[in-house]
Amino acid sequence: MNDISAEGRPAAGSLWVTFRHDGALLLELLADRYTVIGAAESHVDDAERTAIILRSWALGQGLDERAQEIRDTGAPRDEFAALRHEYSQGLALSFVGALRRDRSALGNTSQDDELFREMFGSEVPADVRRLESFSARLASEMQRFFRRARGKAQQRLAGGAYLLVLNDYLDQLRAMRSGPAGYRTIEHTLVAIIHEERYLRIAEDDRARELIIKIEHELSDLYGRAMDLERGGQLR
Image 1 (cartoon, rainbow, N blue to C red):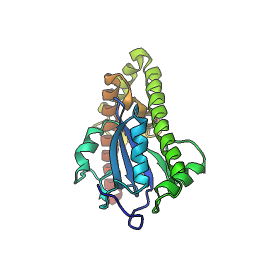
Image 2: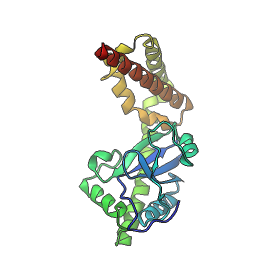
Image 3: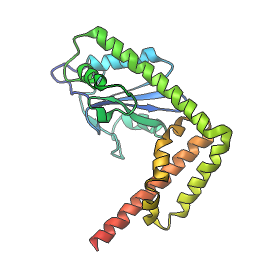
C-alpha cells in the first residue's frame, strides 16, 4: 500500500471491522460496498495501534491506490485474500459510515456520519486534533463492542444449556435439505433469530462458534436452493 495525495484519494464510504474470537481485528476502509481501499490488522486490546491505523488512513497514508474489489465477490484476487480468509469465521459489520444506513455498531446521531465524511472524505482533514479524538473514540468503541458481545454470548449460552437449542436448529435445517421451499416458513422466525445471534461467532465457547457457523451455512445453502426453485417456477 502506498501514500495517496489528497487529490487522488478516494472518499471512504464505510469502515468495516471483523472481530475474531481471540480479539484480533481486521479493519477495512471501503470506498463503496465492494471496494476496499485500506486493510490492516489490530487487536481489541491495542486501541493505540487501532487509532494509529485510522489516523494514517485519514491522512492518506497506507491506502491502496488500486481499488481492490474483494468484499463479497467470492474470489478475492490479490494479497487480501489470505488475510480475509483468516477472519472468515469472525463477526464482520459496518462499524461507522458516511451514511446512517451504513452504520450498524455506533448508535449515535448524524454527528458520526458527518465526522466520518470529514475525516475519511476525499480531502485530508484539516483539524488533526479532531481526527485524533475521533480515531481514539472509534478504537475504544471497538473494545466496548467486543466486550459487550462476549458478555451477551456468555449469558445466552447459559452455561452450555443453549447449545442444545442450537443443535436442534441445526437438525431442523438439515432435515429441510430435501425441501428448500420451506425456507419461506422460517424466514421471519429462525432466520431472524440467527441473524440477531451472530455475536455467538466470537463466543468463548468453541462449540457455540462451530454451531452458529454450521447453522449459517445451512441457511445460506437453503436460501440459495429456495431462490433457484422460485426462479425455476417463474420461468415455467
